Length: 198
Image 1 (tube, one colour):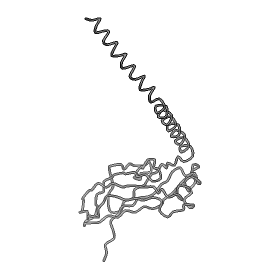
Image 2 (cartoon, rainbow, N blue to C red):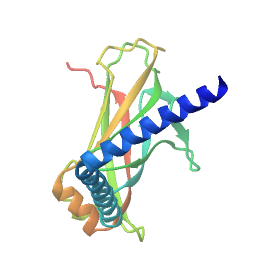
Image 3 (tube, rainbow, N blue to C red):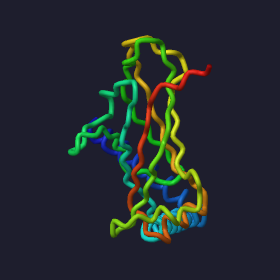
Image 4 (cartoon, rainbow, N blue to C red):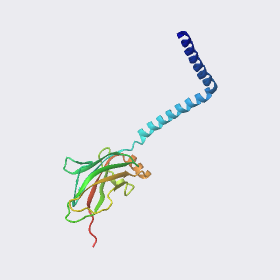
């Protein structure tokens, strides 16, 4: 009985092997074409990746200093710098990408306030640490927005806000980054109450 089982298993294995061999014989051109196209795609992808990383590795480490007036900022992604200022480290950003950072804002006012957000003192530095901002081809290469809806904050009220930074993917800006060897940038974020309209 065991000899019969052994022979039947060998026969099954032989039939499967024969089926695979027949399949390969029948479709060998298609199989070779699939292998060739796969290898060509992998080689092309690797070549493009190497080329892009060596010539167009556009990444910019960035830090935003937080300045608050009439409110208090704390927590979230906010950290204290050595000089005592509060900063948001945006990490490394690439043109066209978005980075989010959060922090808490508490009203120090005695009356309800509406907040406003401003970006200023944008500075781009090259690999030698020189300021190359004067060559900037765009007025606003950074887009800073937040999820604050404009709702009034009551005295002492605290809210969590998420700031979103997007770096321009405009070709002029990308060329500026390459041509000026820009390696990092800094800016000041100001959060303060809006001036009342009278």
